Length: 213
Length: 213
DNA sequence: GGGTGTGAAACCTTTCACAGCT
DNA sequence: AGCTGTGAAAGGTTTCACACCC
Image 1 (tube, each protein chain N blue to C red):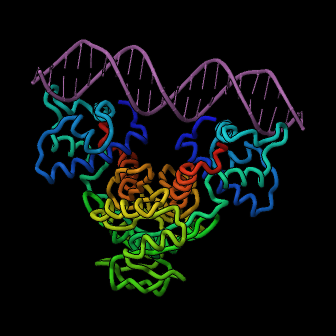
Image 2 (cartoon, rainbow over the protein chains, first blue to last red; image 1 turned 45 degrees about the horizontal axis):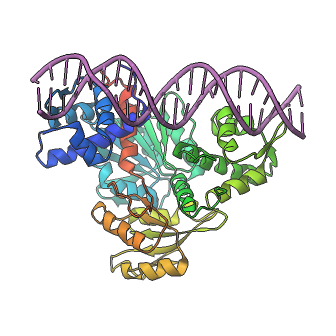
Image 3 (cartoon, rainbow over the protein chains, first blue to last red; image 1 turned 120 degrees about the vertical axis):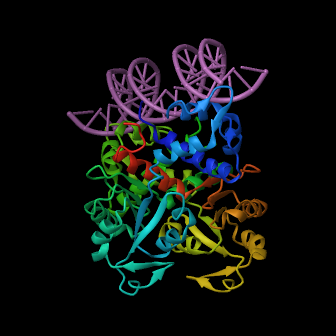
């Protein structure tokens, strides 16, 4: 089986979301065409994506919701819960800690760490904010697998290295700086400014600005 | 000149960030190879991307920082400031309102809107939070071009339509729901849960879980 | 010499057509 | 008949090689 491409993984994640909806609605079977309509892609692509994971469908019938849900959950490692530690509990860190999507369906936040003495000891929901010195024991005790960086750009690289040292498997970085991956610990950089600039381009294009036309 | 592909636009935005750094460092000229090293891409791709925008470089010499900076700024419509209105001033909206990248280099937040009566009248920085009924006059008075949705998923589609009705050019959506574009007002959906799931996949792959190997 | 711009080659992704199973 | 899985075609993107200009 060939490796999945990142763009394919992104779509599979979308399918998983749709499957959650279907499950909640009590649907048991569906076709690629039906799913296509729900997530606005075409049926060909969905079949290609799913076929990569093995023969999950039944010809002439379609796909079984539970079976595919189980397959995708296991693909994303979501049947064995991912434990997440957030570094940096400013506005963004707080928003992430409270974001429902970070506390559901195979993901659980198990730690909040911030260097600000004024914040240490306070809590968000049921989770207390801990000092950086507690990071390593916290990571070990909770067997966390994912770190989230919501710290200023200046400290992001150092914090990333701390997370790597704690043995985490992957890091999600919100600091507006490109982190260099080390030791095969993958980083996903989410740069909000990039998203805004992409949009600025679309907005400018709408008006025909800067395109030379 | 053919249209720029989204993936190309994303890279151009990255180049622009690097150019800001180079400008700050007082550099006046650079080569595609030099930029490649700085942003970890290959020089071929950079030249291809930049060549699409016209003959910006000088053979045997390289690119002039100021010239390219001006070209990219105008491409993104950033020389004429983009004015941004944020809908939904919860944790995420507050984080965005305070995010430095949303208040710099051709982007300015000009309005905060929230339906919560307890928030209306309070301020973030110099900006007062206004009720939804103020949205239309606010958008008009400030000639805003970009709307940011940081509202719950349930109200996102309705809020998007409100923004469209106000004549905005593009919308950045953080609600975990896919918005259907209408009236050629482009939407960029930023789903934080997707980012996390992509990462969960990478983390799981590290351990060889769910891949069948 | 040095570094850009560009057409061709290699590579990957998406779309299509249809065989094959129920 | 209906819908999936798959090999082939089409469409894009990235990489390469080299002509061209300073």
